[in-house]
Image (cartoon, rainbow, N blue to C red; front, top):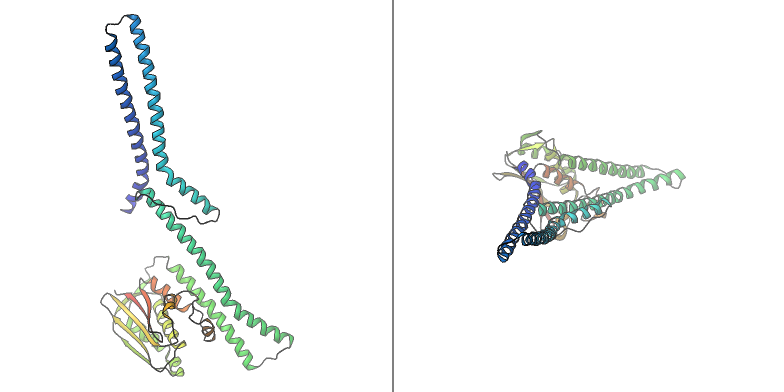
Length: 359
């Protein structure tokens, strides 16, 4: 069906122009023929019986009328044809001008669409393309700016400490080297997460079949078990409530999502209530939720929580080692699995959840 439409749409313009030409030419030829016919009849009736002189006069007069009507038909027909053709190709000319602006590195204003035909559809697609390119450009600039900002502070810290050690201003001790080591680990973690994000960006644009059906009970329980010692050392109780449900998962992505959500709950934990991990079979999809008390997330900022490098409290997140990429990576992975991810919060108690289609 799509292939048929792709070949049909361009032909419609050609057929419309051809049909317009035929209508205009046929109309004015018919008009000219009618006028010439009636003129000839009128002249012949008026002259009655004609001798050679009158016949010559008749022929000359008829010839003059033929020239007048023919030239008039050609001129008027050409003007009308030019008007309608110009009206038809005007949107295409605007499209060409907008394309020239894009070649010069500018983003043109959206073109006005006055019809639902193939020309209108082409302009709609062009407007969407310009908007997408503009958003991509803004995103790239923001990404570079955010990445530079994230790297600048730890690199500046490392550079300052190393210069101070080199010049003898300070002497190294275990605590200093531990701080430098932690800063270096944060840099490595940031680069690794950024590489993961790039990988899932690439995977999301591909079509894969290397997915395998797995029971979510096993994935959830195995992932939670990985945090056994972290939870125990932090003095945080965890409760797991899961039901069976089989989903198609790709290359360990879903365990990473669960890990990111649990790690996020531990990192920003505030309170005495346990962290609750649940897995629900909702007949058509499987829902995983990680709930627990944490730092305040204002309602106005909850819609941005899955943006790259976004953190509710940047200074505090830096102290806890947050990079603002974990939730963004989780969203990329869930999107690639045709699922959804979100947050419910009353301010201090949060539930991060995601859903996946059941097999």
